Length: 106
View (spheres, one colour):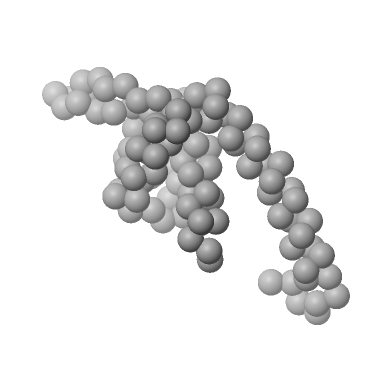
């Protein structure tokens, strides 16, 4: 898979994981696990990138004596999710065109 495409997909997956309520790194990984595997280092790189792009905010709070970072989606993050859904409809349409007439759709 193209690296840029994969990067964009992972970004929206992380946004989707926090779209309904704020969450923290380990919980995000757990929520995504049924759908995809992601390393902690990859997740934290994505979270930093999304924060830099103002697609999410972060706050620190103490939990069991340790500081934990909680991530919350922003309005811009929600807009990016909506944009992705619209783009994906176009990608699906292109895929249908490309595979039209094939005996077995992959």
